[in-house]
Image (tube, rainbow, N blue to C red):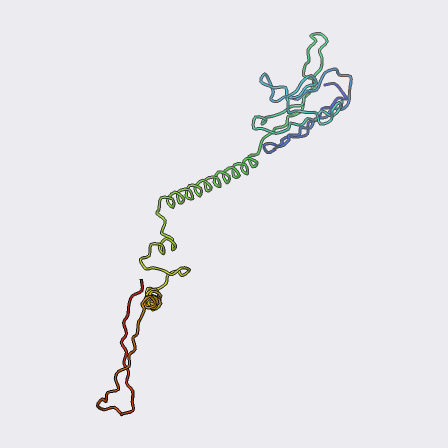
Length: 235
């Protein structure tokens, strides 16, 4: 260890929910003569993965303070289940002999885990949405079946149709006139028809004076007269 150089990775564990941003802290101080980059590795040993480096990093990883020589904190956006693991902030030193980067100093590691609480509301919301869709489908099917049954069912005759086929004659402008009123209306026209028939007949009267012969039971001074009427139909 070079005197005066210090790498700090204070976070022991970070818990986030899916979709949130993971913030990892790492700072260096002291001796600045050590040549070599600072990287973030996920895991340790032969199976580690480089999360951040000056020459390249994962798509969702960014520096918290861009261009800083002391603050190498990073942020991982839109946390996903595969982001779970232990992350190490590592200071490398360039070997002059082999021209390769060797581990100079590293932090104690930060364990990142995802909490499932964010997934529960999403699953609940999805279940509620599916339930509402199911209810709407059931209501729609019931309404469609009801309309289909109503279309197959014969419609009852309307009052107008019943009145049109009623055996009882009706007066114009009167709906549902009782039979007694109809008969009275028919009989009310009979006198006018009979009177018009009588108007077509012509009566002839022939008046003749009778002789002044004395009759039994009559006074001598009373004059008697009789007439005969003949009715002839007009042509």
